[in-house]
Amino acid sequence: MQNPVSPSSHTSNLLRDPRLRNKSKSLNFRLLLLTLCGLTSSLAIATPTAHANRLETFVYDLTDSKIEFSLKNDIEPKGTVISNPTRIVIDLPGIVYQGPTVRRRVGRGVQAVRVGQVDANTTRMVVEFSPEVTLNPQDLRLKSRQPGRWTMQLPQNIAAIDLNSITSFALPVTGAISSGFGWRVHPITGERKLHKGVDFAAPTGTPIFAAADGVVTYSGWTDDGYGNVVELRHDNGVLTLYAHTNKVYVSKGQVVNKGQAIAEVGTTGRSTGPHLHFEVQPDGRTAVDPMDYLQLRQVTLDLASNSFKD
Image (cartoon, rainbow, N blue to C red; front, top):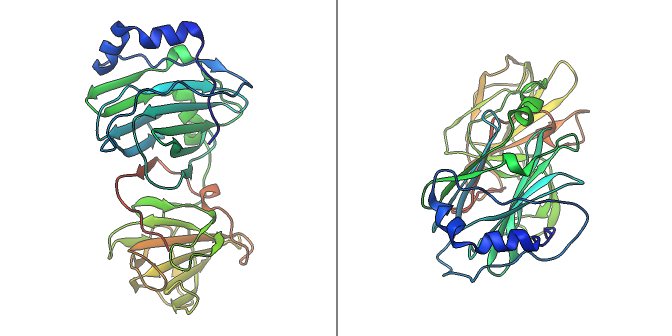
């Protein structure tokens, strides 16, 4: 992840001011943010605490335009606003995140969120915005209602960018995204390959719904690692695929409606746990990022547990 710039001497003095440190647990703790462009150097790192400190969850709620994260132990976050492109960088000194950097697509206003380890003793969270978004650091505040739980309100016009956009597909299942579209090391084979869809972690038996009106073009078992699969062809020629299902409720040639239950979550095929693998193929052959077709109301990264992936 890209290093943020160093705070100015004025901000560094403020960060050391004990009066500000004492406010870190109050409702209106002010996140010290700088508007910075083009420079790269290290942000000052606090003395690390025990490795028991851990980032538990990170949530972006699109409807409320709000960021929330929870920590096993309470610390004082350090943040910057960086432009070109616009992004908020929040460092958590003394918090150890053991795992690969996680990045999730969101939408047009907030384009993505990512979490990773910037060095041995610092976890970094980044919120990436559309180029059309500008932020005033004076408007951004972190609030801690109880130790280890933090929220930050973003301007409502950011959420409006996504909430006013038109999306054609509904979410196929209720569950957190455990693996996004893109190149990765396959958790079972160890090969580096393109993950052609988005994985939604959910318990076995959770209903899977048609993302849009369509006709079932395939229903049943496959030998390509996807296990039980349902494929739907939609009016615009787009094909959606629902893999690793436990049970299939529809048959080939059946007409289905948007939001109709077509299967249930399972872990068939090459899978490490129950989840839905969801693909979108605009031409019926080539998979693209499903997040270009879906509008999430909330992005949740459950970083304290192991995510299941196919």
